[in-house]
Image 1 (cartoon, rainbow, N blue to C red):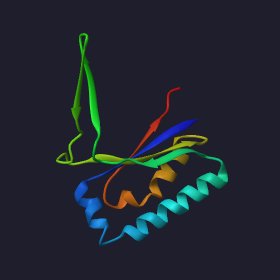
Image 2: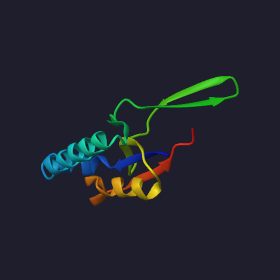
Image 3: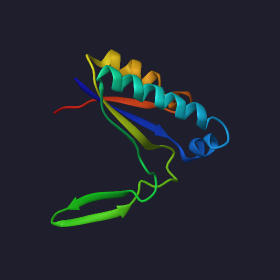
Length: 113
């Protein structure tokens, strides 16, 4: 079954990493990425740029596009992994290896289709 691991964080926490912990974070991701690639469990992973995001909504026949989500919000999604694993317990195990869990949260969601 496929699961998406959504990596949350705040701009403040990520800015703090630049001076305190960026190397540990990068090393943890390289290790997880290599392990998941070797085991065949990695489907896709990437970091998301927090700036330049757009929110799209439809009202009747009108499409509304706004900037956001804004960095003033407490948390934003900074990256993701899509893994193909035996079950939710394995997805949780992988999420627990991500360094972001020391200062934020990683959400685990089953991919429906």
